[in-house]
Image 1 (cartoon, rainbow, N blue to C red):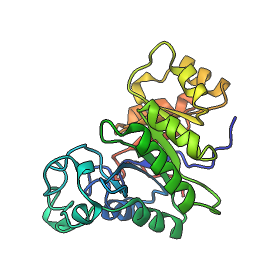
Image 2 (cartoon, helix red, strand yellow):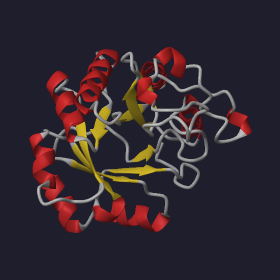
Image 3 (cartoon, rainbow, N blue to C red):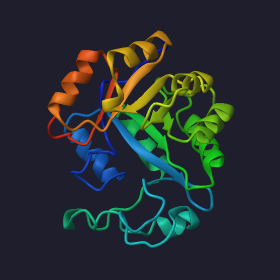
Image 4 (cartoon, rainbow, N blue to C red):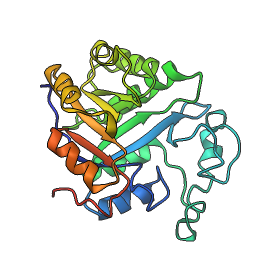
Length: 245
């Protein structure tokens, strides 16, 4: 098995649905609930700054409009990314990856960066995110885990920063799913939790990789995944599941 320094429990987008996703406020709330590893979504501004946001468009989680990747970072940094969630978070900004990295490194937290490209920028986004992550975490004991549904993004990340661990995200299991993960030299396969069976877990472990699941919000599902011997559980329910200290 490849080296795996990460904890079992991962807070989805910082703190799940308890705070505005992909913001530093969410990371802080997740940390308050005892989480030491966080998942987030990263994409590029039009001027090449890596920032956190899940959707291609701005409307759901900010007071902005249009495609996020078509705006400059200066414009994106002025948006309100918290008021949509609740009044308590009004004025919370979109963070850059560097903002989040600084917080995680100073507090010895672990990070799963999902590369979430604006459509049409898959390879470029994979390359830029990986290069920036390699630079930021240079000399740190534990690098971030880079994951993506986009094969081209993972190819780009592998090409420019092969030393960073990668994970293939899957919402279904095509016939060649394991071969794809192996070709990308992934350290992990990250699946919708209902895809894991004793057989698929055994296949991934036999290939020297780890099994992670998203998004696990029910106790029965978490218990089932732990019984299967999976290696990571990504959850919104930071208030329900207490990670080991």
